[in-house]
Structures are given as structure tokens and as C-alpha cells.
Length: 573
Image (cartoon, rainbow, N blue to C red; front, side, top):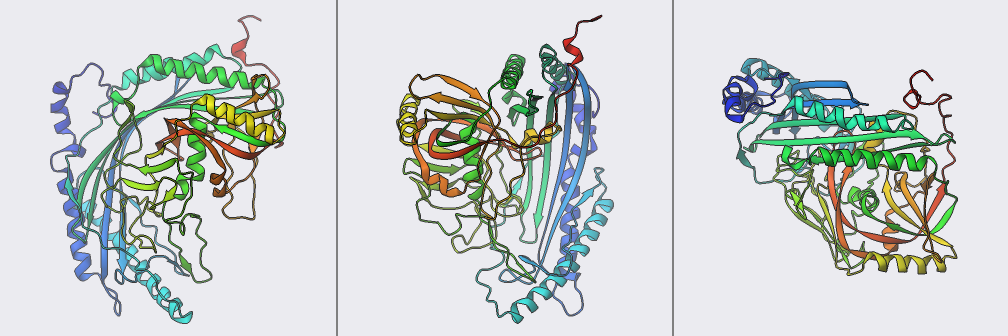
């Protein structure tokens, strides 16, 4: 099946082929899970260093991913890949739920036993790999636990919270399934969308990336958790970059995503998105540059979502301090001690819902059923009428959370699909009027409207020099917002609007959330990049920040190409 074009093949006709695929045969989950469980039971009873205890907890997390990916530029393929791989993430804990080898960094190297498993369903090969990784993890865990015990004893440290919470083990077995993708159809689509940029020779780099993948996951633990689950993702990303005459790099992306092929729109929507992207990038080439500014900023659409992603959502996950032989790591979660306190205006409430699949009829991206630790995802009310009620948690107990709510990302608690809802009835006209008042108070002839900020994933997709300076701060909690892509001056007296470029936001902290002055009543959904292939949706209203510092970007820039794009020249010229 893999590498073959599936165009015009019905599901009924394809069914016999699927049965023959070893990675999706009826016994796939049985083979992998049996190898996991058998080796886990053996390790629990027989894996033991002299003078040390056996593991009290073991889990194995294996995910088999089948992905089809293509990249196209100017109507031609630049990359095509259909691949399958199977990963293994072991977790071996020594000690007990109260005190174990985690949350401590000593002299012993931390085991990095994540590994790849054979995609052939050979019980012996899979079990051998599990055996080796378990052995490595166990020996590392024993050494770390002994160092941790000594450190606590020498420094007279009390273990305030348990190291691992006890959760009800989940048993949920679904059927592993294949990726069914019409490769020829999407190759043709990517070529046609990318060819649109031939009409815009001023754009230096453009590409269309399409990914379709199915991940079949098997999770088992010594607590008797048994999970077989699947996730399907479809993403089409359009990216473009160019330079202004002064060398400033201008870049942006458009992203379409869903959990099924039917979640993606038709070609016309992709075509429209590509043209809009090209036109705004070209428009910014000749836009005037921004001067230093201190005054009100109205955040709308994607810019509002990106602002809240950086200032709010990134800080709504629990994080536990980890000890080391030298010092205690500083927590970067400023809301950790603010449960029960007001952190947002009373008009705003925040809910994290991993099960959300649509908003106003449009599909949402980023949901899941079970988190990294095998805990069933839960819908969590994080903020109610401005008051922080909870954080997204994993299985590390804290002062305010004794149990997981199914939001572990492997490093702590993390948000998924976030809804920031507003009780306000304010319209956009109300926000414009209020922004004018604030501009007058700040003695500014205009206020700023931020409509788009640079998606973090755009930087990695468009591998060209970037003019965004690397800013440093002595404050560990300082945040630098992404560079504004669409930033508009709105004059108070004339209502004239002008797009500007070459701006950057000065570093801020979460305390700026207290400066949200007015909020709109309508919420909109935006796809947010979280690095790599990680995207999710954030739903929020527009709002005004009473005062922000925006500076002219003075970073060193590369000079534009000396010659014009050859596509702009007529043949024979």
C-alpha cells in the first residue's frame, strides 16, 4: 500500500489490501501489547540490583505513525515522503509514590532510553528492545534515587508533596487503523496552490507543505492501564517570505488543519489563502516603518489569540520545582500561587477542552483522548469570571492539585484547545471608540491595531535570515511577543488607517493582563503553532491593552538580492 497512489480506489476495494498490511493486521496491538506486558511483568518481579528495590512503577508508550508528506514550490515538488515508524517511551520509577527517583538532577546522567521499535510485528524483536531500554532506565533510576536520598538527608529537606499521584488506570481498546490518503490528489493540490506564487515575483521564497498522518498508540502500565488509541491529523500550510528595500525580512503563513480529510476545505479556499498571503506580504514590502510608541493597542483575530497563547496559556500548566545537587530550579509558571485569585478581567472565563472538535461549525485542531501519562483527558475550567480556579496538571502533586486532570505533555501540565469566553457585549465600534479615548489620554495622535503576529512555526518553515533580534532580560518571567506581521495605525481625528512594518514589542510579563481595558463580545478561533508539527486552536475575543511599548526594529539585516527575481523578467530580455 505504501508508496502507491490510491486515487479512485474505493474503501471496499481497498479493504483486502489493508488486511495484508502487517502494521495494521488484526493482531498488531496484541503483538506489541503482549511484548510490553510480558517484559513489564518480568521486570517487576525479577529486575533488581543487589541492595536496591525493584521498580514500583513501569509504563511503556509505543506509537506507530504512518505519515504522507509533500512540499511544493512554484508548482513543482521539492519533497515527497511516505514513511512509517514506531517509537517506544519507557518510564521506570524506583522507590514509591511518596518518594522516587524523579524531580532530581544529580551527577548521574539521566537516562534517555527513548527508542525506535521495529515496524514488523515480531514479538521477539520488540521484546528484546523493551528489555534493553528497561534495563537502562532502571539502573539510571536506582543511581538517581540514591543521590536524591543523600541530598535530602545532607540538606535536611522535607518532601512536601508526593512524587507521583495514584490515578485510576484506564482500560480503553480501540482498533488500530491505517492512513488512507489519495496521494495523487494532494500532490496535484500542493502543486497548484504553490504555482500561484509564480504570479508574485517579488516574493523570494514560497512553499506549500501537506501532511496527513495516523498515529496508533499503545500504552500499558504496571497499574493495569491498557490503552489502544489513534489520532489522525491533516495539515496544509502555505508560507511566503520576502524582503523590504531596507533588508527587513517579511514572512507569514496560512494554516488549514483538521482531524479528518473532510475537515479541510476545498481547493478554492487554499487558493484564496495563498493569494491573500502573497498580497499581504507584498503590501508590507513597501509599508512605512514604525517609530517608537507607548500607548493603547487593540489586539484582534490571530494577534489576540497569539497574545493570549504567550501570556496566558503558556502559564496555565502546572510545573513542579526540581532539585539538583547544586540548586533548586526556578519555576517559570507565574500563576502557580494564584489559585483563587483574580488574574483576568471579570468578563473573561477560560476553559481547556481536549474533546472539542468544532466551533461555530468549523473544525478544531489539537484535541486528544489520553495524555502522555495515560490519563484520560478532562475538560477543565481554568478561569471563572477572571478568577483562577485550576491549572492543567499531570501526575505530580502540588499544593493546589493532588491528581492529574489528563494534561501531561511529558514535562508537566499543558493546555490543549483553549476557549477564552467573554461576557461583554461590546462591538468592534465600541473598542475603536475606547481606543481613541485611551490614545488621547496617552497624548498619542493614533493607536495601534495588531491583527497578526508571526506564528512561531513560520520561522522554522521559512529557513531564511530573520531580522528579529535576540532579546535578553534579567527577569526570568519576561516574555517577548512574536514580531507583529499586520500592525495598523489608526488616527484618532480622521479614522485613517495605515499598515506599518519594522516593529517589535518590548518585553512584558503576565502582569500586563491586568491592563486589558475593554473586551469584545464575539470570540473567534485561530490555529496556533507550538513548534514543529504541533498546532492547536485557541478561541478568544478581541481586546485592548491600555498601554504597551512598541519599538522600531533596529536589528542588523541582510541586504536584498542585487538582481531581480528571474521570474519577473520576460524571456529574451
